[in-house]
Image (cartoon, rainbow, N blue to C red; front, side):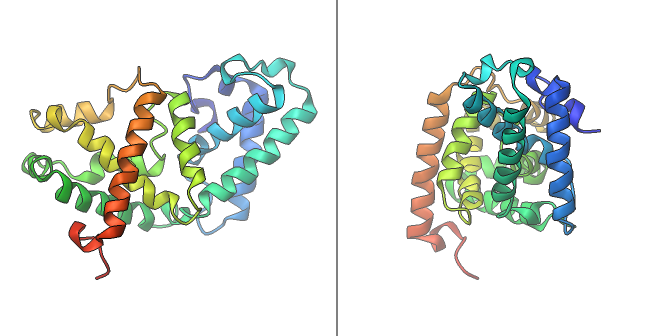
Length: 239
């Protein structure tokens, strides 16, 4: 059900060969991870791996991939690689997809606490308007910002995530989300609940380039270093 609507803006994922590849990857992952099984959103998380690996195998830019011209042996290699990468990537966040999604709940709580300390006026405004962090950041945590940026920006963002140690990338992601939210702070403080919801559902990032992602990552690294130097200052230290 999910596969035909995976990344509708990318023609590659409407190709029957890629849809069949993706279906096998997700099915095997689901069978091998019975604690969670397949959950909506995992299909999206597999897409950057498929595109990057296929572009590498065909020695072309992602936007120039010609699926019809790909030999079966290349698609087999991409399928195996995408499964392996997806498995490694999800190994730190499998509790995002188990009952009650405790991993996502914890990340949203961390985001709430960070924003409270870094931009209290924004935090108070969201509270006053009755906008709960879970209402807009659940998707950020579930799909790791994949739906918030152009695809080439996602690849750049995830490149930094993968460069983090496996047990730390999900923690770093919270800081990225905090910087991302605060980036819009001046506009958000002028909005009521309905305007906030509409804005959050479709953030104006369609023309973002890697330069904006670089800035986002740099500020997130600074924020993370401040937290690790003084976790109690952010209210996120051990209880």
